[in-house]
Length: 382
Ligand SMILES: [Zn+2]
Ligand SMILES: [Zn+2]
Ligand SMILES: [Zn+2]
Image (cartoon, rainbow, N blue to C red):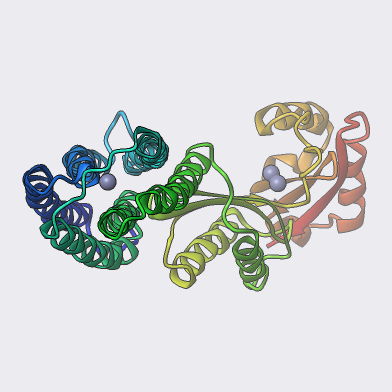
């Protein structure tokens, strides 16, 4: 189940609403910039308008990714579809890099072409409108990106800001041309486009890191591991592994518990670890706990030992001579430190006759002597 306060469907609804509002603004801006740029003789504004049209494409990509990425888990995708959103965010990061490079090329082109047509002043107003509406879109989108912890919405928010900045470049360029310094916009364009490419690089890098299962921030991992070690019943822990999946973090860990605990108590402790972690860290959605009776980080000491049915076969062969063996009620096996120690439960009534507990224990212990994987046998009465 998703730990986020929004269901997957709500996430999709919000992301697509925010993105469609952005797309409408992009469409209006694109039409405005191209028409006014054409009438007002601003090459930069026309290019910016074409850019706004291409933004519609990436808006469409965001809605598509949100739709695909916020489906519930199914047979094909048992972990859910969150990483589809991440993959699209990586692509959008790449688009931003391309946009940055594109603006540089365009700026250099204008620098060398010596285009001296002076734009009309109305183009300045359209560029200003573009800056303001794009900055507003950036802020609006980022609010929801943070609320949903959505990588794709975050990528799109930064795209809006990069558009605002590139419109500033157009604004400066137009103002520069009108006041007789045409190289001003080219110089500004190069700086700004490098900033855009850098943001694109960061988004792409972050997304790709998630796709290759990079662990969470080391500080956070440290605080998670501290939290686990504080939980009663957990004596040690190892192999804490974390990774991000869309808005959620996944985690698996080995915890060491007292080796004599029952399976059900060990299970209870592992449930407690999951419950406490998902409660204390809102983004942690899934915790997989492996229970260890001893540290098996470097190697598992007991993996060569036989299973219960083989051990009982071996033991019963040797118990033929012990007449009380038929009263055995239960056998508990402890696999520790490369050996098996055996606990046998006998009814108290066995001792009611003239059997001596001590000699019985000796007989049973002698029965394990030929079995070198057994390390001690204990008789308990109840
Ligand atoms: Zn754009
Ligand atoms: Zn283990
Ligand atoms: Zn382990």
